[in-house]
Image (cartoon, rainbow, N blue to C red; front, top):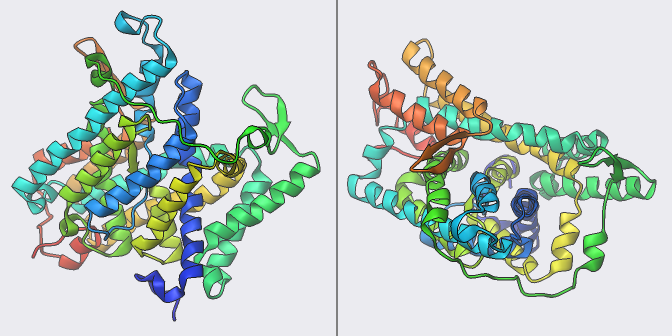
Amino acid sequence: MHFNEPIRDARKLGVPKMLILGIQHMFAMFGATILVPILVQQYGLPLNIQTTLFFAGIGTLFFHVCSKLQIPAFLGSSFAFLGGFSTMASLDTGIYAGMSPQDKLAYACGGVVVAGLMYLILALVVKVVGVKKVMRFLPPAVTGPIIVCIGLTLAPTAVNNASTCWPLALIALGTIIIFNIWGKGMLKIIPILLGVVISYAAALIMNAMGVTVMGADGAAVPLMDFTAVSQASWIGLPPFQIAKFDITAILVMAPIALATMMEHIGDMSAISATVGENFIEKPGLHRTLIGDGLATSLSAMFGGPANTTYGENTGVLVLSGVHDPRVIRLAALYAIVLGFFPKMADLIGSIPSAIVGGVSFILYGMISAIGIRNMVENQVDFTNSRNLIIAAVILVCGLGFSGGLTFTVAGTSITLTGLAIAALAGILLNAILPGNDYEFGVNPEGDQNRGIHAA
């Protein structure tokens, strides 16, 4: 078997290797997925890590069912809703005056349930109008730069994590590069997992030697902290909580779906381009929107965060060359199981952020590289000032609005993420600027590589 060629059926590798590949995807999503509840807890709302992991797995499996088991996508916690959780945590008027953090979280989750249901409206539009008409508004001059932004907006996170301990981050990065370039057989397609395992072993040695890193308050703290691991029980149910509904919370959380739906389309284009399949047309963008939206609503209904397709796992697809959705579903099962083992969840959570940063250097960069490949394959003409303007505005919006754009409607504060602003700006400019040189269906191979082609 030639490992340089994409592997679309991992069963050829045998069950043990498939199980290992699933672990690799679990490690790729784990850091970002548990970071969302950690950040929300810092806002003062008790979003639980176990619940988050459980519904990341359940949501992923649900998405796969909705998309006919065809798309190798993992659904982890969405960062787009962090601003909404922060707003909910600080609400102290009306029914929220003196409300317990637990109840505030329930109302915030109610808003997320409604946000997830908004995906169904867009799915209906796509189904009625037709995906090809919708995709005419998303030519490669728009989707390419958006995919580039998806990777580059994550870049500061990679650097910030790596900067906590550069030697450790470089060990993780170097291990991945060495095994991806010079590895043979199975070792060549699990470089991310090897990067995590080898750098974790190095971290244990460094921690035993007394190596410290700078904490959030500027004081030196141990490289690794096993306090949570020692205190956690071995087995325990994820703490579920039923969502509550209030118009204020809905107006805070639901509009964020406008941003995440645009990101969803970009992510589907990125995965389609990565795998070389036509996922936006088959099984269809309406199916992926329904899967993502209902996975989000299901998670929030029982006290979990919103879900979204994960770029980290798209990066793993590129690096491993294994494009089999079964492997992603294994990672989803691992996440569900970890949701019932608090000690194991905390043990994986003990991975130093520097390791996550070193791994992310590769994963995030790969996503941006796919966006560039997308534009090259579609022969986007950047001597055409129209295309140049669209790409320029998308890149500046996507990278410049790092904190998003917040505005007030009817007394309610709404925040659009930088990626959502970039997507909206690109689509709008493409629709109104004259001289569109993109003709749908002229370059079927290029269109298919970005996830859509004319029949």
